[in-house]
Image (tube, rainbow, N blue to C red; front, side, top):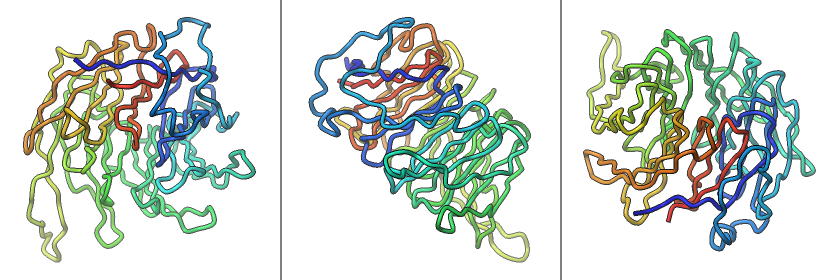
Length: 360
């Protein structure tokens, strides 16, 4: 049976780590925290770390955590925001540009200049806490969401300028996360109102093209499969749901046809597998033993779980590996697979530590 082995720990944040984000090359990792900062890390040996990582280590406990010698912090963006930095992501085509979203209601764009990251734009508009930020596949659009029940879509106009092109207000509660389709300008949002909404553009008019219902409590987030055919979602109801897009005819309002999409739930990991709310899910590229990749979850029961995904129209998820107390007695807030090295997984928790694992 496969197992997750720990090869590096990244210590430096002074409060819980909310999210991690790999850059396109898989050699830089951005993190954000309740300590109001963001950090950028990299293995000392670059990409060769993933080919020869050395010896597996045991998780540290308490105040004993130190950054592993095989990794380094490239830059710390101290006081990036006035409150918790809840979300971070690299621009898809860049190692040197990233976005952060904060409980202070703002989203900041950072660009590396002379070795350090400088704020080149601040996006304001959310009435209160911004919960998530995500770049579109081409990097031209940026989506944010927040406690004010809204989803905002911003367009990069060059030289650090962004224009808000749409504000979407159809959720009835906090919007917890936003995720883009890997190859289409299709946006998905996940909410405290127990629903998932799919948004798409029709001649510069963004609208809700589908509502996915099935979870019985807060939906914390989701992740697309590598090819975009499937969407995984996780929830307070302790289930993982896999959705597949169904063909649907365009709908007419009497004047013109507006394209719509339809998703059907094709697989469910039952609530018996996870003991508490599932806060994060990530879907890897295809790998040996998992033609559709691996699905990882981070849970409030302090465990990281990995499922192998197989099948065609209907996805089968089989538990492949599990690490209990992966961050001690702390919730797991985020899991993210490396985009270039599909068996490498980064996790972040309430213990303020980031851990780098290998699935073997």
